[in-house]
Image 1 (spheres, helix red, strand yellow):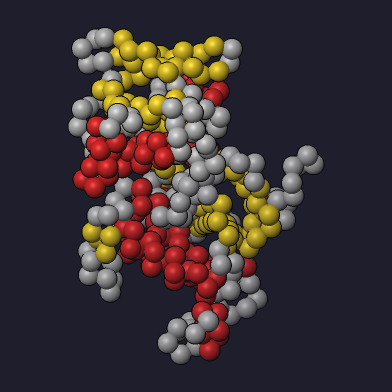
Image 2 (image 1 turned 90 degrees about the vertical axis):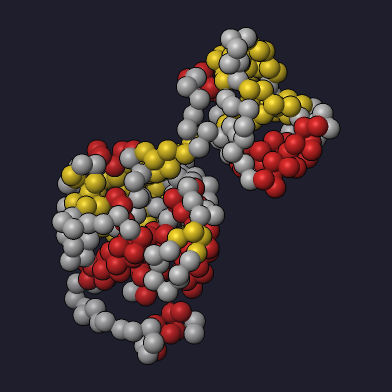
Length: 345
């Protein structure tokens, strides 16, 4: 640690910024416990935004119907009085208990936390981009190869290739076009696209104007010269080989959940899920709690509303763990002056 920045010291670290992770932040805030939050995605929302952002949800109490996006927006608003510190696009890479009982947690971005309590709200795992099965591409990640369109990237004069056929893929192609790319190519395994009608219409207009083109093919190889990516070798459904120039490659093949190193942390597990004490949803390690789809116990149901219940009891458990000499009262947001002060109402 001598050559690395000092770890961020905190009372609570939440792994996962999905609906349960956000509600965990809110419940911790009611206990006057500030939280840092780490998530592998570049945005808050977890599965709700990654998989069903615009699909309706009907089983959230008090909300007869809301989309994944709407639910996340409400949860962000609810947690906002407690000002959680977000650390996005980072995977948890290490966990080690210290002599004083705190947990040293490291991320893929070389960020380190020294936390007294840890809340694992990782759902079915960290959602990470599906990659092309071409190991040679790894060397170009962050310079020529991206799995989300880089906001800092200027595509002017470059040959930009986008892999995929969903909204994100079409949006990346249109962004590159607006930035003045010399050529924009969309590569998709099928002729039909999976994007919204509005986005497809704008995309097709640009395509008919000759500003971008589509290749129905799959990537089979790379053209690399002097440690630089110059092009892709594509295979068409008819068996033809297509050489395609490429300065900047943006890959949109969807997301997949990865359990990651969690299974190596020595916590009690059953069928790749963390076993917990349902009194406070603590795991087998002191100071570590698990809420949402990542945990298991008799009668467990993988529902968002179940995760909200778990996060509530976990926050009470954390307060008792952090302040063993204090009584943790049950207060109601309708009447408690302390809670009103915390919420700013």
